[in-house]
Amino acid sequence: MRALRRILEEFGTLFLILGFVIAGIFLIILTRILIVYTNLLVTMLGIIAFIGVIGFILWLLDRRSKI
Image 1 (cartoon, rainbow, N blue to C red):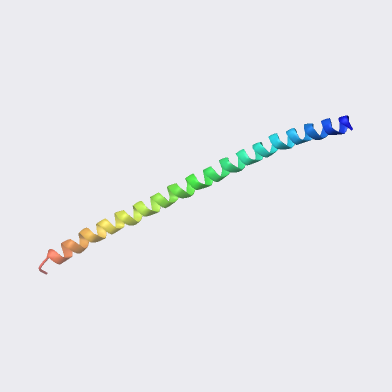
Image 2 (cartoon, rainbow, N blue to C red; image 1 turned 45 degrees about the horizontal axis):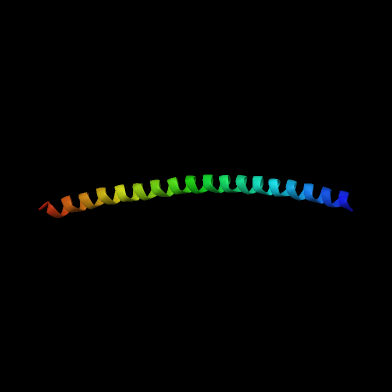
């Protein structure tokens, strides 16, 4: 009985370590995905803001011209 308990404790420790490794890998992958999509989102917002500013400047120049 003691031998079985010892084997189960060793397997429990092994599974605990394996679980921590899998959770760490999952968190690293999730962080990488969030970083990639956050950079993509920031880039898209920057492009939209840049086009909006250029459009606003062109609209102002068009309003001021008396043609």
